[in-house]
Image (cartoon, rainbow, N blue to C red; front, side):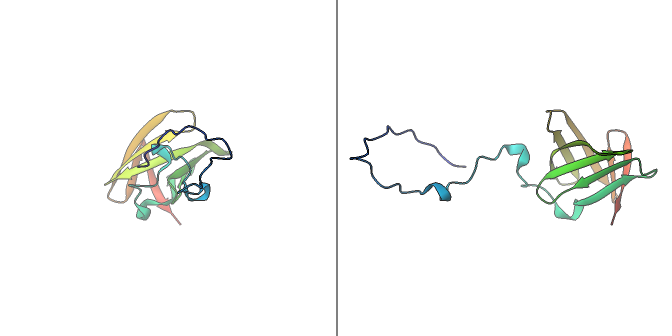
Length: 115
C-alpha cells in the first residue's frame, strides 16, 4: 500500500527534484480491479448447458458476460479466494458463486468450463 504525503508546492526557483519520478508511481487501482486472489486455473470461458449465458473470466481480474445475442450483457471485476468467486459489475451490482467439482455455481446457474 502506498502512503501519500501532502507537501506544499515550492516556487520554481526553490523546487527540488522528486525522489520518486512520476513514471515510478503506479496508477490507482481500486480493490475490485486487483487480480490478487484470482486463481488462474479458473480463468477462461464458462457456459451454461444451453449456451445462453457465457462468462469469460480474464486473467486480469475482469469478466465479460454474454447472454443470448448480446456479446456484452455485463462486465466488471471478479476476485477468487479458494473456490469462492465474488463479482462486481461496472454499475456496482455484486454477486457471488462457488466452484464445486470443476463446475461454477453462480446466481442459480450452473456453468461449465469451455475451451
